[in-house]
Length: 226
Ligand SMILES: [Zn+2]
Image 1: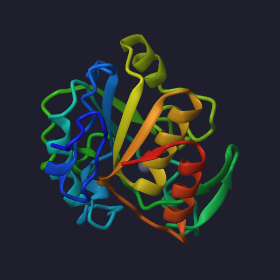
Image 2: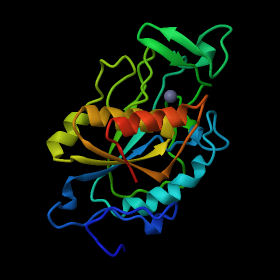
Image 3: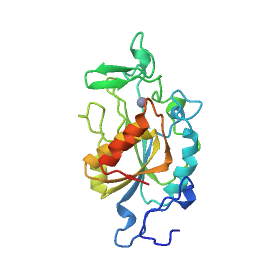
Image 4: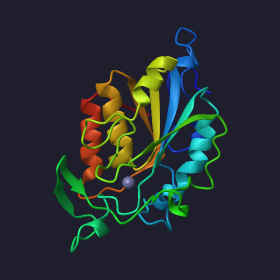
């Protein structure tokens, strides 16, 4: 435990040393851990593996014990999803194309509904998860953010859920830092939530400097780095 229990502390990558604040003036009921896309396809051996992705479940399991509220998100695409390079003849994974809602990175087929790749990593053991938000289930639109699709129009309903439950302080972890974690954190700030991204519980893809760019945007938006 930190010397001053009112402070949020991060002692690096040791999850046991990470502690959220316990200031009695700010009770923990308004805090929520948002676990982004810790699924087989985003871990080594999966279709869109994030380096070190399989290291986050143990960190997240430990962190989840410090929260009364935990939400998981799950990338959940129909086969033939437009974010897949295989849906664009001649296109290669990791290229960028223009879709009606703007630029879209093309990915290898991943997290297809009800497949092994879409399931949560078997090491993830978050007993107190109270909600699973699925996203990316409309064929024509990708969804990095847990709050809305990449067309920036279609909400997932998560903001309403959080508001109705009085959950105002979000602590975000998961895969990948520079895509779904960052988009989720940025949207949460736009919607007026307090947001901390806990780096020990995240891993990045870092495509052409995307990790640095994501952190720059998050810091500008007032996302705290834990
Ligand atoms: Zn996806």
